[in-house]
Image 1: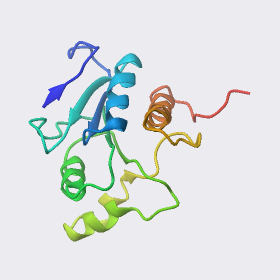
Image 2: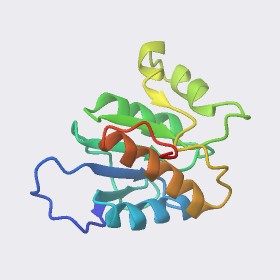
Image 3: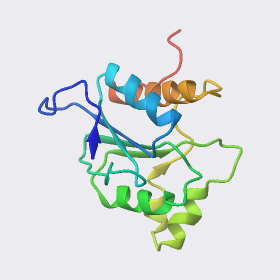
Image 4: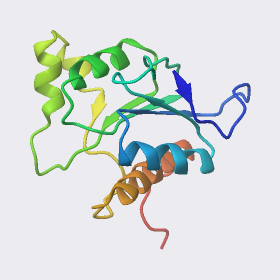
Amino acid sequence: MTAECEIPPDVPGTRTLVAVFAGPVAEHLVHFGGHAGFRTVLVDPRTDRGSIDADDDTDIVVADHHRPELGHMLKEALAGKSRWIGVIGSPRHPAPHVDALKALGVSDEDIARVHRPIGLNIGSRTPGEIAIATLAGLIADRNGRPGGFTH
């Protein structure tokens, strides 16, 4: 696994952000996530960027919901100890991860642990906006806040 880190790996309590599947959204997640205080890791089965190694301080974001490896990567993530798992995708479209996980025999209870859609609802369209909305939601959660505007 190749890590793109701005935080030393021995800082306790630091959340790790794992972006699954290399692409524009994942690139922005890794870049901005490091600046936002996350240890960042990119995992992609097409490269030497191995498997998901998660603990209870790990947030996993699947940054492409159209990949044939989607079910297998999510099943691997669900088998670990991650704190949170989410898949990008519009709420207006079907969630392909559900069928992919069911085909692999994953229980409905485990499937329900996968969040979709993810991030704050800011009307994201570009990869950068999707990454920022996702990170904003994770930062709000990390800080014990609901997200949204402070009136």
